[in-house]
Amino acid sequence: AQSVTQLDSHVSVSEGTPVLLRCNYSSSYSPSLFWYVQHPNKGLQLLLKYTSAATLVKGINGFEAEFKKSETSFHLTKPSAHMSDAAEYFCVVTVFTGGGNKLTFGTGTQLKVEL
Amino acid sequence: SQTIHQWPATLVQPVGSPLSLECTVEGTSNPNLYWYRQAAGRGLQLLFYSVGIGQISSEVPQNLSASRPQDRQFILSSKKLLLSDSGFYLCAVYHGGANEKLFFGSGTQLSVL
Image (cartoon, rainbow over all chains, first blue to last red; front, side, top):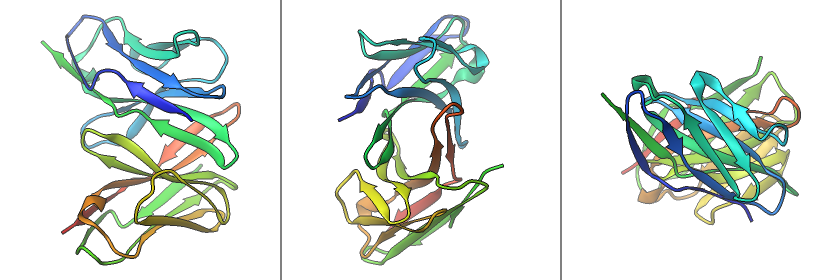
């Protein structure tokens, strides 16, 4: 079975400080992992993805994530938060099964950026 | 380019009434198709996914069902809606391989009253 756990439902940071959004996964197979962002009243936008190439993945808007197999983690980071980063972030794991590619979303982390 | 058509955009239905939400895809063939439900504070819950015509994998036991009568058509149905079926329903298309991508439809906001 596979699952995704986003450890924090809400994260609040000050503008200009680092961002850390945590994601842990469990999977019996080699997964692909994604981070998506959803701004208020907007659709889901892909930030970055890991597909068994480099373990440190760089995405859009200065975000990056590191795949750590030993820790089963794929935490999302950004060195300096901007007000426009306030949104909801979803970690996604995809694993190929007999029924196709199963994509499981985490429950989301709401990021708040304060002045 | 690929396009996902999902309709209707909003729907208000009484408890106990039937449901049919349709998703069609253009610009691709043999897609992996998905139905998700997004509820406030609960992220996106995977309901069904399909790798081909007539092939449906169900993730959550409930009074919803899905069908894939054609390669690029995915339908979410219910014979009798419950209040708890209210939510935002998203159809998605996934392509694996070197250019791995996940696309979403515009969603249907379902209110069961």
